[in-house]
Image 1 (cartoon, rainbow, N blue to C red):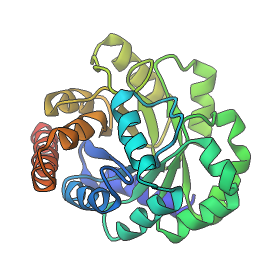
Image 2: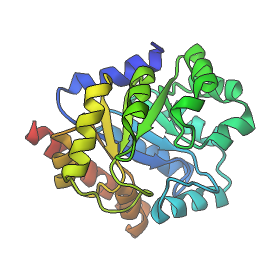
Image 3: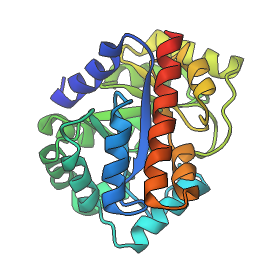
Image 4: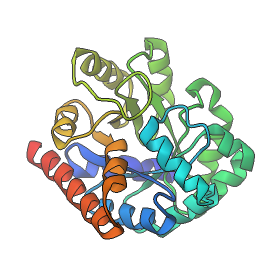
Length: 265
């Protein structure tokens, strides 16, 4: 098991309850602010998901797309985001979310070497299917970085079995079909999917896409090990009148989610 995978798994299991996993877009609204927001959220989180802005983010809804475009317009590069990760290495483990073209453009070995040097624990590549990820996974293992798999309610039994065979660190369970930023429903479809995943996957399950409130986080936490919140955090940052207000909003929301999950345990 890569060191990064062990770090991620420990972050989930050490809490003894469902954990908060916030998403921070690297370079949004600027690089310094993304470091600041991640540090603030790290007080309440077990793992930080750090996004690399990309021009064609197929899994992201309009809120995250807009944040990514703003970061790109300001000149944010993948190296810049890995630099953010390096600044955060003394906090919760970092799972970098990026797309395969970003890794391919740099070269998987070079990208993962830089990620490992930055202290990144895991890499999430939503457009790299588990059955095509072998070469990247092998390089990630050499560098001590976990390649985090994804699963969705539409994932069939054979694919879940394959994900279970390769799973490390945690599995990112997509709560809704489509892109980020919708509204999650903790219904029979979602709970049934998580039960199927739990039966086949030994590592922690983190659920994301469409989670907006502490109450939804608690409802999901009854069936999963972690809850990812992304678009809602970006919305709150975007609507804040100034950087100080954005920092305060991030702090208050992170504390509220963490408090709710702690109280539900």
